[in-house]
Amino acid sequence: MKIDPTTRRRLRLQNLVFTVLVLALVALGGWLTHMFSYTSDWTATGRHTLGDETRDVIALVDDTVEITAYIGPDAVTRRGVEALIERYESAGLELEFDFVNPEENPTLARELDLDPGGEVIIRLGNREQRLASLDEAELTNALARLARGEDRFIAFVEGHGERDPLGESNHDLGDFGEQLADRGIYPQAINLAATPQVPDNADLLVIAGPQSNYLPGEVAAIQRYLADGRNLLWLTEPEADDGLDDLAELLAIARLPGVVVDAGAQQFGAERPDFAVVTDYGEHPITADLDAITVFPQASALEAFSAEGWHHKPLLRTREQSWNETGPIEGRIYQDPQAGEVAGPLALGWAATRGPEPAHDEPDTQRVAVIGDGDFLSNAYVGNAGNLEFGMRLVRWLVADDDRVRIAPEQPADIELDRSPLALGIIGVGFLLVLPLVLLTLGAIIWWYRQKH
Image (cartoon, rainbow, N blue to C red; front, side, top):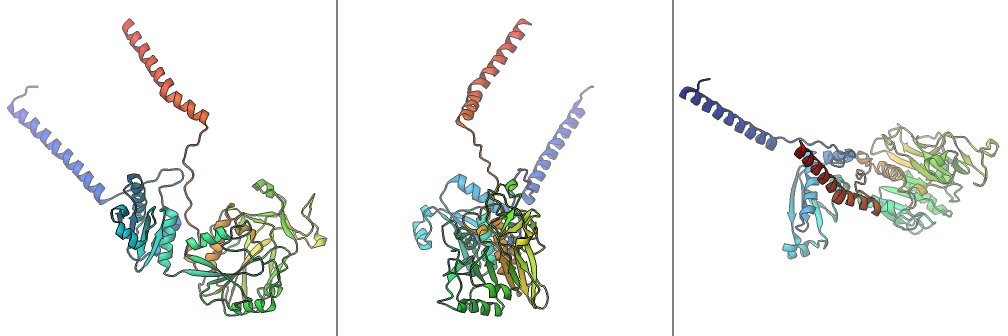
């Protein structure tokens, strides 16, 4: 091909046009990435994706959220906070976010009474929440409390050996009470012998496994409380001597004798047969989409009977291999129908509403739940399987907090590599010594082969 001046000019023009088009394409790509964004989480546990509950809570926030992180200049910490905030923004939360280094402004730190380790302050309107640490669970719970607009209080009856919602012993409910407080539902104790009227600010009354009889006046106070259309959670126990038979009759609930045993509980890791394992849940807002196993140690089976005004729904059903054992739990046990032992499935929990229609999802309806066990929420067992999730769903339904029936988002699975010292030594020697020697040997062989040929 003969190249003349005209051909050269044509080639230069083509090169110029090509260069301009490439630069325009790069500029267009930069503009598109600035105007539009797309994020995809390919991790197995979805640890970079907000949970469904978080998105539900974000939908409840109808104003701009102000988040100020009062933390030091550590770049790693700040990048982690920024990454979390960006996920909330991508999910549709309108927010204003800023970092403030308290070390540079000690006067402000004193005025705000900031924690020495740093704090994050979240404001919505004239309400605020303070967090000492920031992750999805903490931030979502803070947003839920702010969106609700008011705190909830639940009264725990005390004075008869009931489980303490702030206690630290194995049979108490301190861990569960702390989880409630983290979500803006605060437990408070009440002694009906000293204060025969439940406080007006209590959204729920809880009877948590009394060990001695209630006085007639205390039972009457509970009955008056229910007559006012208020809500109740009763955690009863097998063969309970609590003087609450009249209450059970009022609620149209009967407690079967004995302790529920499950012949197949050991396949789920239970050490004793009197650990009832529940995988079957009733159709109710509390248990909707609940697919976790729950465990109830030494539980009592319950039956509901027809009563004017009450509408019952079963919440928990034991497996077919279960029954209410009335004899001692030792040696070889079997179901004895003549002793009043009933084969499973048995109901361990009932939810009830009172009114002309069975409206289990209306927030203004009186709500009651009776569970045949209190151990499942105790410090010793609340962390087992789905016990905490069921307990949180239960309380939230009872205080008419239905739009957040599910618990906080699950934390991602452990992603740390945990190996023994021997394994770590092998990995270190392999990468630092063996692998370089192999590469050097291969290089020498290839060099020798080329020299020979």
